[in-house]
Image (cartoon, rainbow, N blue to C red; front, side):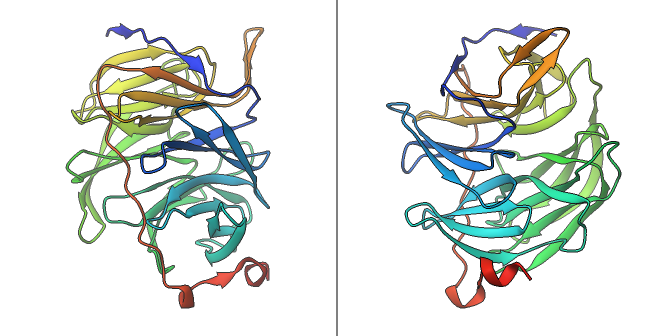
Length: 304
């Protein structure tokens, strides 16, 4: 199994406690990402490295882009629409309001135009209380998978016909046939089983050849798997605990990777956002069609 060498550089000069959810915004030339525990959303201008911070009212797990340039954010209090220009939040839905032992975690816009987001059991030891949800733009919720510990690793093949998903504490990656017109999944199968030494599977991305790039959060690597689940590459990182890769740039050949602050064997690295030029383009993640104004409720109304 070849080790691939890329020259990574930090994009920011401040610490991320738990950096997560990098999303490329090709329309504006930005990379969006979050710090789960600060909590905050950030945008980085890919041309000049300028950063804008947007404080969040509660822990944030992930985000997705809307067609009208707003963000869908997964907070502990549920799914909200966030308008960066005004700082306004509008509550959409909470997929599991009674599951107080969980928080929302990894999320991504699917080829069906919906926001897919999972939850995680938010204490140790992790228990199988989490699920994966499909959130329609109008707020309808579908529970797709149950019995998870840490829902993670969402990504889709270039043709949109295969969905990948990981349970970081399963620990495994599974693949599903995916109907991008209806959002239906079928033919669930085990793709990869991993351990701490090889890197428990955290967030992920897919390249144009259909390879699955998985953040090995316990091993300081990105593991690159073929669509059949074969380990075909291992990318070493200057971060002990990478959390999610994302392709971006004008040619989609810039790899961004978030990480969390970690210490292992007497070495400590700060959570950050890394960047490197790579030799293959990635698949760009889509956007959500904005829900109708009349079908949303305010954050204040959500805090019942």
